Each structure stands twice: as structure tokens, then as C-alpha cells.
Image (cartoon, rainbow, N blue to C red; front, side, top):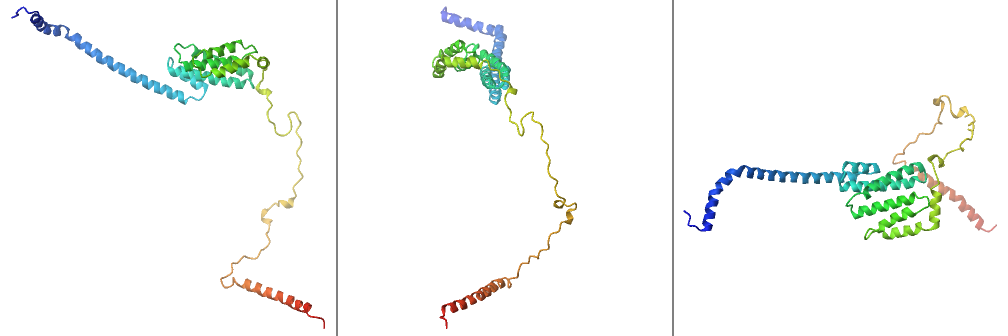
Length: 283
């Protein structure tokens, strides 16, 4: 029985409504609890899968050796950090290959420069790019524009200025020196001349042995070898008989030494007589 106290009335109502609420919303509460457990399990699975996928992608990045390998890593793991660094490394490797090809195969160098520019632009166009990756991509693009310049350095200088725009750039001093060099007349004249050169692989002289190309072959004639040097039957060759080699016994081993001693004594006796005769006065 209620006494009219508000607290007692509220407690009485909660006691009356408690079983009804559990009976009415029990299934919803149970399903909600199950959903939370499933959601937690899915989140854990996704986190573990992402961690495993990241380890796999970086392992492939570390195993890559060529520009094509890094391009495959970037395409296999798009929209990831490893994709950005793989594409950046691809562009830098292609740029180095293109610069080297300029001195031996201009046509191949042009194709490599194009691929390098595409890879570097793909990194530069990324949103929320890490400063270190953006800095390297901009520097690579500036070098590309410098290497492919026809003497006009405006685009290359503007690209180097973008690198300087990054706060605390580690390439600031390098960029300043390149900008100063590109503003010089001698540098612009060199690139204007070099851009017109079209070396080809066959233009490079290859080392040759013997006579120069186009020279007729000289006949090779040797005198005949005497027949006596090479008999028809090798069994005809006879070796002179040589005395057999014998190892002396223990008792006979000292005999040669005694004989030599006797020989020495006999050899010295005439010398003694002669000496005495020479030293005595004439009688």
C-alpha cells in the first residue's frame, strides 16, 4: 500500500513496469547485444586483416628491384601508403635510366622520360601527401624538366621553386645552386645544343679485333711441318737406354766418400813435391 510519498510511488511503478519492459523489449535488447559483439568481432578482423595486408605490401616493396616491380606494387595496393612510395621510387628509377639513355639512345630516353613524368605526377596529384614524399616528387619533376629542356629554363626553375616552397626542405641548398646554374648563359647554351643531339646505339663505335671493318681477309699460309717431327707411328720413337737407377745399401753408401778422399790425397802429393823442388836452391 502506498503512503503517497513520491519516491515510494516511483519505486512501486518501476517494480510494476520492470517485468513488462523485459518481456516487451527483451528480444530487441538481446539482438542489440549480439550486434555489438558481432560488430566488435568484425572490427577486430578488419584491423588484423589490414595489418597483415600492410605487412605483405611492404614486404613486396622491399623485394622490388626494378621500376616495373615498383609499378606492380603500386597497382596491387592502390590507395595505400606503400602505393605512394612505390610510384615515387618507380618515377625516380625511370628518370635515372632516361638520363643515362640520353647519351646512347635518344629515342629510348624520350620514352623513359615520359613514363617517369607520369609516375611522378601521380604522386604529386595525391591529396594529403606526406611532405617528404611530395618534396621528393617535386624535386624529381624539376630534374626531369631540366634534363629535357631545349635551352629555355623557365619551367625547370619554376619547378625548383616549388621545392623551396616546402617548409624546412632538406633540398633547399641544392635547389638554390641549381637555380643559379640554370640562369647562366653557358648552361642554357649547353642544353640548347644537347637537345638537338640524337645519338643512336649503332653510332657508338664498338671494339674490334683484327683488321678494320671492310678490309679483305688475308690468306693464312704456314710452311709444311717436317714429317720427322711427327712420325706416322708414335711407337717408332725410341728412348736411349739409360743405366738403371739403384739405391746403394747402407754399407756401400760411404764408399764414394772414401774414394773421393783418396783422390784428394793423391791430387795433393804432386803439389807438395813441386813446392819443395821450387823452394830448394839449385845444386
